[in-house]
Length: 207
Image 1 (cartoon, rainbow, N blue to C red):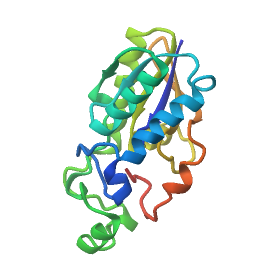
Image 2: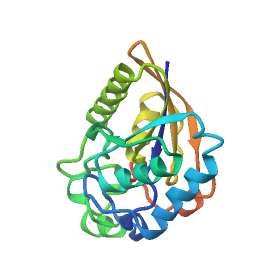
Image 3: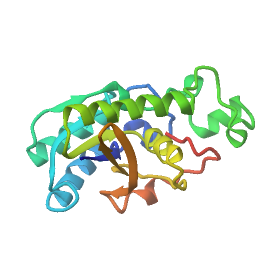
Image 4: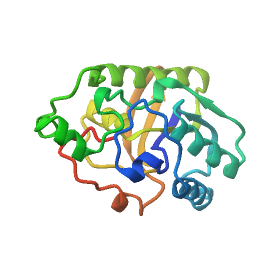
């Protein structure tokens, strides 16, 4: 049985600016790089003690987070899989919530998403396929997956878990057994991160 720890990347420069990221590729902020290393060191004897490999979204903010953690834990190179990348947010990419409200009045409150917004069904399908691929290549053990908030929210929605915001470097646990994927609660690597990520937003799809 494969145990996947699926966590959100560390703080990016667009997280710090409050911008929706989607498939855009901003790097980690300086604070994010420090956060990733500190969290890896703090959890090396706990939640991350049994991690033997790390997989990442192909987007820079996730890949950089994964590489810092891999170097700190000394678990070898990072494997990238675009199946774990963030939801495509279409025309909202690069905008703040305030700019979205200005340009698309009321859209956030009514979940009236723009053209090219990736559907929940599409996002969930590719993430579950990515999890199944990992299950085929790594049948057992613990793998850390560095992904995105939208991915974690989609997984929790798919498995009928209650919605709650996730801070950087926190996420959820998946089990993959005989091709079946199941959700087994939340993962908290940085207990202090949530307080820094409660930006007001009417939508539950915040990236």
